Amino acid sequence: MTTSELTLPQVRKEPRRPRRVMGAGKQLHAGPVTYIVLTVFALVSLAPLVWTAIAASRTDRRLAETPPPLWFGGNLFKNMQAAWDQAGLGTAMFNSTVVAGTITVATVLFSTLAGFAFAKLRFRFSSALLLLTIGTMMIPPQLAVVPLYLWMSDLGWSNQLQTVILPTLVTAFGTFFMRQYLVQALPTELIEAARVDGASSLRVVWHVVFPAARPAMAVLGLLTFVFAWNDFLWPIIALNQQNPTVQVALNSLGTGYVPDQAVIMAGALLGTLPLLIAFILFGKQIVGGIMQGAIKG
Image (cartoon, rainbow, N blue to C red; front, side, top):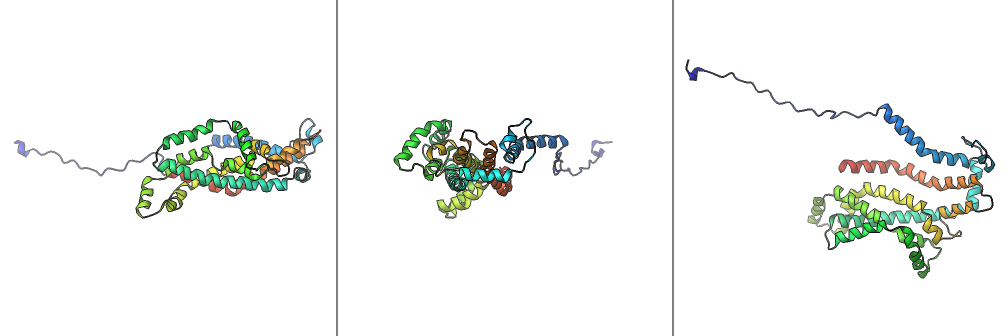
């Protein structure tokens, strides 16, 4: 038998099957340990708020007894009315809404513009200016109280709301936060395409930058609103009891020879309610924005 008569067996090639990724397409389910841990964290987080509501619904004498009350009483609305009248919370609520709302809108707007400039625009000394901006975060705000107060006095703005609003119209944290987000979430090619189509800088910001930065803007807006609403140090120095914010007004409840702890707790609960309402109304959109940004990233 010659070599030409030898035939090799034909090997049939089967089509290669796509390799499966373990866990792909399957929905992850939380186990019982996860639910237990989340429940514990939720209870610990809600405990101060629940105790404030319980104390606000009791009398001052009952709060001084041992053991302390562990359930709600019947004096909640009475104590709230007393705190509202004693601290003048009507004017304080309006002032805090104006101050926190103005600061939030301005901080989100200016921080987004500055973050976009540092993230996508090329200009001289950009790195040095960014480092300088971040460096201001290392300076304690207490060091700026005296020169800031003197400056506001020279402007004739003592005991006026613009004294509280002006110093926080833009923050270094907001600028750095938006810059870090836009570096990843906003493709440079998208900006260049808008430029090629003849879009001006204003249209690029309005139609390209703001839609891409919306999730981060929502998060920054919530954080800024909470910080501005709860700010106490600078408002207590710049404002008086005739034109207070909520935190300044609540400070007056603790004065007196024998402060009423139940009324103080009721005032604190009233001062917290707007933040709870804001989170209930906009919390879903903010969390959805965070997840949308995470998926895009």
